[in-house]
Image 1 (cartoon, rainbow, N blue to C red):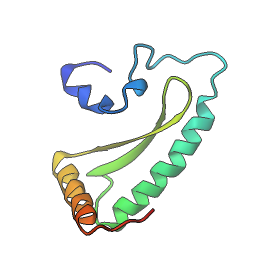
Image 2: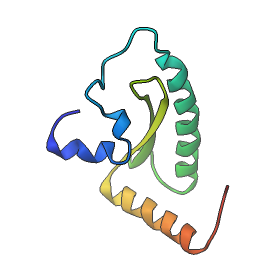
Image 3: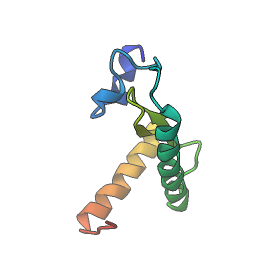
Length: 99
């Protein structure tokens, strides 16, 4: 990753944007980690669509970290991110739990 404007991508996920990011290590099964992340990203994308978000506004993207662990990132337009935050805040305020 490069550029000062992209630092938000690693917020809270420091191990996914280390110095070795983007380099593949021999013997690490990145595909297995990506598959797990893809399943989770697909589930989250279906939930986002069900909540009225367009995939062009906000979406979950599957990836892996440098150790091959699956990672799901949420990427979207600022307005959609704000709406998603409002939805999650309303859910939290209602003391709802899906776990």
